[in-house]
Length: 112
Image (cartoon, rainbow, N blue to C red; front, side, top):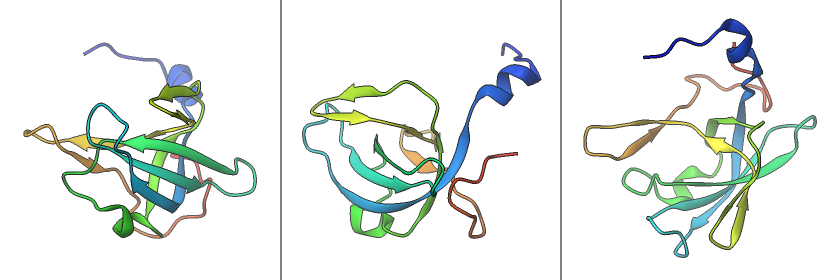
């Protein structure tokens, strides 16, 4: 595993946000859910697509806090433009479990 410097890590803007919208994303190549996430006043809302359908239903994501990288370039995914990368942990079967705070956090809070 290649090591990265502290300065490189500090450039990654990992922030917490609250899912305010979620719906199936049938246009994606692999099963996915489209999400709208509120990162607070400084960052605002961002859209993302996540391949998390093995463990989550769209309705269950509303109000859930997630961690996401908010300073990657936007990326076209099917008909939508993804504006952040929601993070999760890949399981042995290839499914993904979301990386989430274990207590409520202020939207936009940065991972320390």
